[in-house]
Length: 152
Image 1 (cartoon, one colour):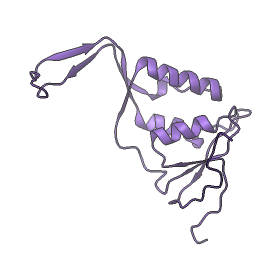
Image 2 (image 1 turned 30 degrees about the horizontal axis):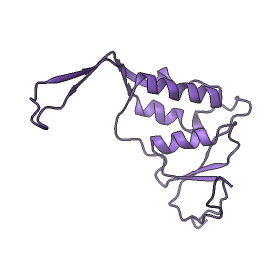
Image 3 (image 1 turned 30 degrees about the vertical axis):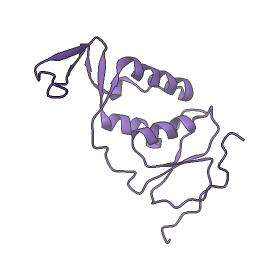
Image 4 (image 1 turned 90 degrees about the vertical axis):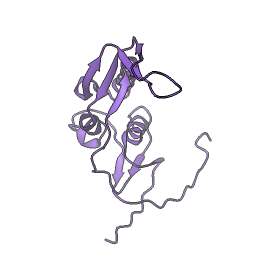
C-alpha cells in the first residue's frame, strides 16, 4: 500500500540499535506479557561501532536473557576477552601520555553482528514453547500515545 501502518501495542520502541533491541527483547519476553513493536525504517542496517562490556556486567545480561527466554546469549557474542584492562588517559589533565592505569577486571569486546542477530526475532528457531518476540515495523514513525501512565 501507501507505506502507512495502523498498529497498536503496549510498548513502542523507536530505533533498532543495541539498547533498543535489548529493551524490546526483555519487554516482550513471555514473562512480561507485553506486545512490543520496534519502529525503524533502517531496521536491517548493520551496527557500525564495536561494543565492549565488563565481564561481570555481560554475565548479568546473559543470566537475565536465560531467565526470561530460557535460551543462551553469551559465548557466540564474545569476540575477545582481556583479563585486565589497561587505560591510557595521557594528554588530558597533564597526565603523561605513557602513563598506564590498570584495572583488574576482565573486559569483553562484543561481536556486533552476532549480538544483532541474537537480539532479533529472526534468531528464533520457532521451537521455543511460550517464546515471545517484539514485532518490527520497518518505517519512520508517527505515533499517538493513548495511555501515558504505564503504572496505572
